Length: 525
Image 1: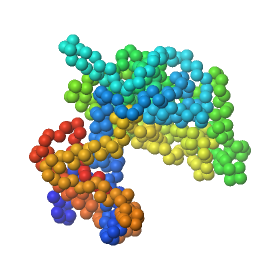
Image 2 (image 1 turned 30 degrees about the horizontal axis):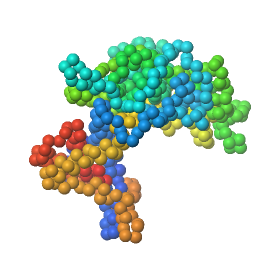
Image 3 (image 1 turned 45 degrees about the vertical axis):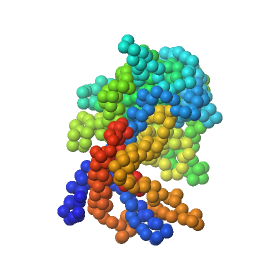
Image 4 (image 1 turned 180 degrees about the vertical axis):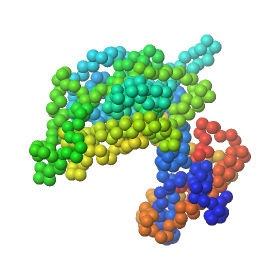
């Protein structure tokens, strides 16, 4: 235990906090018990999923995702009460012209009432796909081996994007002058769209509601690629055919060459209530007007087409092969706590060519539009959807434009709806229950994680506990960061000691549901 604050430097305290799984940048809230008047400052874990921000929180988030992946991968029963054919899939070749149907793995059907319907003719450079009858199931089929044993295999898939030019082993372009940075940036910005289309097409060709747990990471060249645990097994050639035939068309105004460069940018006209040309004052076309100008005939050209690359990795995995399953899950979630820009390592590890490549790609994604509401549309002579005064190109608030994400502004984990039938909060509660049962078996009582719940009320119906944000700059009664970290580390060490002793004293806990990294003290907040 840490007893003397003066003996521990801030750097050492930070290292101890990381080593013991204590959040290093907690959010402070003032808790008031209205029944007693007692007040206390409670540190709430920040919940970051990025190691560069908070290693303990990022590690807990990653391990929670590992549990979610394992629980749904080789499931052999259906989730009760769900009709897997109730959701109508969008028509196979109707593309979303507004470009904003970015479902990111949540299997949401396109809203026909708000989308512009274009020709359903498939692109001539994309092969046709068969459509087979759909079975009302999500689990894979079983096979009986020559030894009479029944197996239920599943798949581990890796999808990539196409080449933008030759690259060296360190991921940098062999010829930066000819490397297609514009296409690389556009593909990164709209990668979720082609991924979503892949799952739709795969389900049509597989004949059942394929379920998946997928993560988005970056290759050495900084292009995103997808690792996916897929329930059930589909013939290898079918998966390859689906990948080759999958594409996503972006029906947007053209955004390859900017109309306005430098400081001569469209200005906001208060009288007209819209953006106008900086020279002649002519009104910029609105987003809807720009879409109308594209046309809806077969000669219309999409602003961009995202396709998958030819590299596709396919592995069959049997659920009973615990070691192989564990390695696959570890590989699947290995880089979730790192940003895309961390692919090359820390600033002191990155080489000069890698830094130049990263900066060049970041410059491209910063100035390209990410959505219909993006302020970067002003560079291309189009007024963004929902435009307002103060919009400036290069200052869109979407994280897709920043250096750490490099175009990937959406979620890094894409999970289909019937993977486990649980939310992350429910998976977290499962981990807490493992702790509670282990401690109870050893005669140790766990803290009530809901003892300070804002929903608890007094006899008159008013809330008993009131949570208020803390202003660090103007509150003189706050405990020091040193004191908060020390208290958190001591609580964590005490909890870990109790839990380890309880595990030794009680029955062995199933490692797949282990909650070793779950802190009841932090959950209480």
